[in-house]
Length: 88
Image (cartoon, rainbow, N blue to C red):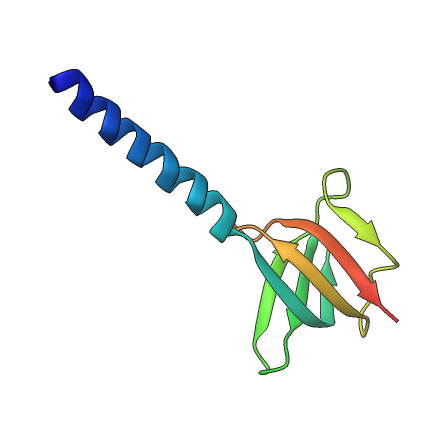
């Protein structure tokens, strides 16, 4: 009986953890207002500026990142960009 309960609890925790991974990423779109090393400040359509970390080795980049460029970034819960795409 206890094995069944622990098994169900374990399965529930696993499902919730996997669901959390899918919900953790967010999309940030806007204009680059500042680049400071690996940190890029993006101003979204509401005027909010968000800091994202663009790792030169790990982040997939499409286009040239420069101030004034319009971008869309896929960012994890810690602010690390998985990908950044410059819009024409």
